Amino acid sequence: MVGREKELKIRFVPGRCELVEEDVDIPSRRVLITGATGLLGRAVFKEFNGNNWNAVGCGYRRAQPRFEQINLLDSIAVHDIIHDFQPHVIVHCAAERRPDVVESQPDAASQLNVAASGNLAKEAAGIGAFLIYISTDYVFDGTNPPYKETDAPNPLNLYGKTKLEGEKAVLENNEDAAVLRIPVLYGEVERLEESAVTVMFDKVQFSNKSANMDHWQQRFPTNVKDVAAVCRQLAEKRMLDPSVKGTFHWSGNEQMTKYEMACAIADAFNLPSSHLRPITDCPVVGALRPRNAQLDCSKLEMLGIGQRTPFRAGIKESLWPFLVDKRWRQTVFH
Image (cartoon, rainbow, N blue to C red; front, side, top):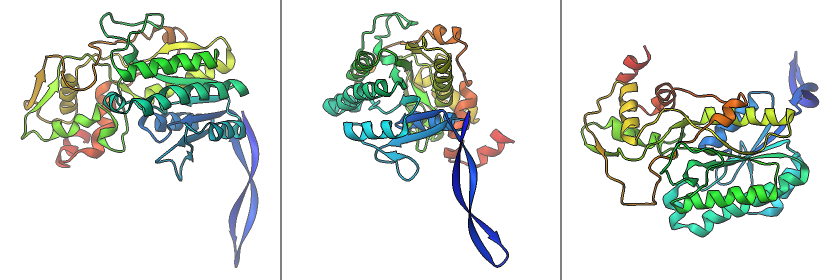
């Protein structure tokens, strides 16, 4: 489904140039993405934009010129963009997702993760837009995996608590919304620190220095491209079936500790891994983490929704621009 709009273009003719009006196809399905400057938001924007959706992304500090600059704590600005654009779908990726930052800045994190999410849900309900709220596996305590959507949450840290409160605020303000819980993410990062997975690359590459890596917490690294595809599939399914709502889980299906991820990264780039040291004790610094918060994804799979990129393929695609020793590229890509 596309609409027609006029767009002014410059046409060069002998001796002069002139402005002409041309018809351009504007997809009629509209999606608004919050946090579009972040790792997941960029992938979600790209996925919808490349699949016949009219996508508008918004961000805050890094928004312009590509995306709309919106402070999600400004309820008037949020109201205005939603009423002006009239999206059919809103994918709410914006959040404070760093557990240690949430512990140190609890009020600011609660404002973004809870209050702004509830307000967004209310505005979405006001125009009948389908809201997808991105949540986390950290709503679970990690003692009895795998977790179904119906299992009782019990977050161990403040990040998990704010995201769970955000879920409740969303569903209280908009009973037709969806909550999508996902685990640790990686993908095409702008800088290595954007993901808890890619941030390990420097420790892997600089093999002249031994590096301690957590070998206690069981993780399920998930490619943002896959989450983006799930969001689009969920949105398209909902446009055909109003009963698609509530809580859903999506995750990669390869279980790895950070040590095992680091070894897999080394293997993907033919780099040594003998300097990586597995630490099997429970971490004692920072926010508490669940030991194994594996998500059961069968609910989405039964709807025919899902996409999974093998970790080694996904991590190679994500990290090769950050490869320090360019000679390795020859062995990896030729």
